[in-house]
Amino acid sequence: MEHKLEDIIAIFNQCFEEEYNTRLVKGGDEPIYIPANDEVPYNAIYFARGFYSSALHEIAHWLVAGKERRKLEDFGYWYEPDGRSEDRQRDFEKVEVKPQALEWILATAAGFRYFASADNLNGNPGDTQPFKQAVYEQVKTYAEKKAYQNVPKPCVMRWLNFMAQKIELI
Image (cartoon, helix red, strand yellow):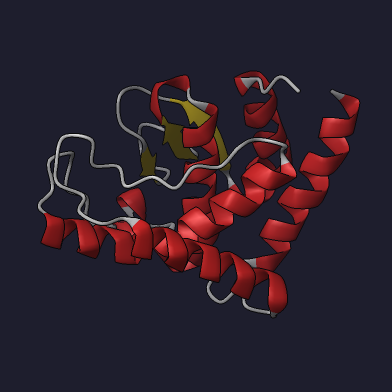
């Protein structure tokens, strides 16, 4: 199956734009979430460089963020660019487990291959195996229980159902 940016943008926007005033937008070098403001009247999820995987990842962050964090630029996350030390990498990984687990679920629903991302190409990520295992365990938790804590479950289910219907049409 060919994965087109236009499709994922259209699916997200059809699913969430009206109710949540949120649009998925192809962005530049770095992804970012910007809440509605005086210049842009809608919440914008900008994914990086036109990568389908970045779109899925940023959607996962939006789904995990919840109502209050969606009022904050980049959902209130700190972000330290490429080149993090091993200690800072561990801090980064702690906040990435749930979004990456959800990204894996979304990617699977879309028939797209998921790769765990340390997002630290120029730094020292150290041993990423514990992080990958933590993401896997979180996927299992989401799958086994009613464990979408802090994730708007209706949003996730709407997205997965809507995406499944659209994929059949594409």
